[in-house]
Length: 337
Ligand code: NDP
Ligand code: GDP
Image 1 (cartoon, rainbow, N blue to C red):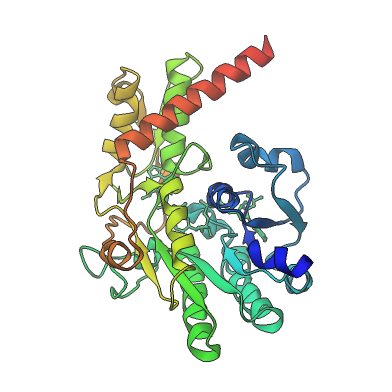
Image 2 (spheres, rainbow, N blue to C red):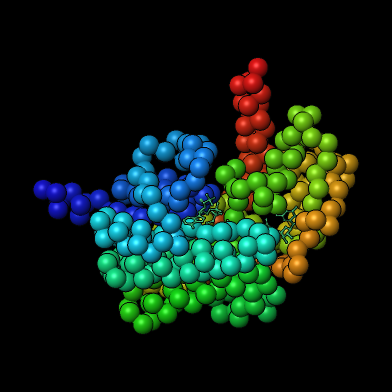
């Protein structure tokens, strides 16, 4: 009996489940009937760590496992026990700017951490399907105006260099050991659950505060940078689709449209009837030692082979984020009263 129920229910392990993508992916997997486990590194403020899963109303539906990407023994122990059908490696030190301050930690977590998960899978669950969260940052100093799976990489930060190592380890484990391992090269994707340090959420949070009279200016760095921004909710579908194919492969996931930080910011301010020029201050503190000036992805392969297309426009997403930030701040005000 137990075996039958195991066959009917697929099991997934998600590292980085407490982050933006981990939360949306967990929701998608639960909707599809998976048993979802999440790796949860110890943090002193465990309650705050659950905020994203709580926001989606799923914190009591996933099982968290105490473990860390840098601790191979924790990965081996959990993967041996739960024997996942699918492993999504989303855990990382994921903020580019921080990677210059903590380059070695970024290498350990974002690079070696992926190798640890691949090794654990290879050792104790070699039939599990593996997804690696790769990034458009690997294209860095772009070698082609529109980046696809065949565009050469040129990483421009310790984060991108660490991700490139993880990407090639994924390809290598597929080719060396016949593992079903996929690398999803995802362009920037955002949502109301995006970390506050990333530029979209920094902007939408500031716009909400300015609108509510809690803040008077917004300090930004290089607003001429261009990104191909999509919605995290759309992008986690592509991760899942990659692991449902006959053969493992690598895919670019993007919208095919690029926008400056300035124009993204303008959308946010205009949504609440304000002019960004009255509030934005350029601050050298937020410029980077090396910049990725422009990213623009070509999602043709994903469209053709996975049947995946982005569903949310940049305008819809930014407005959703501003509205969510306003609602969040108003709820805090009510609590304080
Ligand atoms: P987040 O930063 O929101 O989530 C990453 C999660 O990994 C966090 O919950 C973090 O926990 C956790 N983590 C950090 N260190 C460790 C560790 N040592 N062991 C286990 N877990 C750890 O990122 P996103 O959800 O936005 O992104 C998901 C993945 O996709 C990341 O790998 C990211 O680099 C990659 N990616 C993201 C893109 C995007 O635009 N969002 C684009 C392309 C790739 P804590 O916060 O407590 O440190
Ligand atoms: P990234 O593409 O993973 O680095 O995502 P971010 O959201 O952190 O940054 C996107 C772009 O916005 C980069 O080119 C940054 O240089 C630019 N940017 C401009 N001002 C800021 C800022 O204040 N914070 C952040 N995070 N990025 C900024």
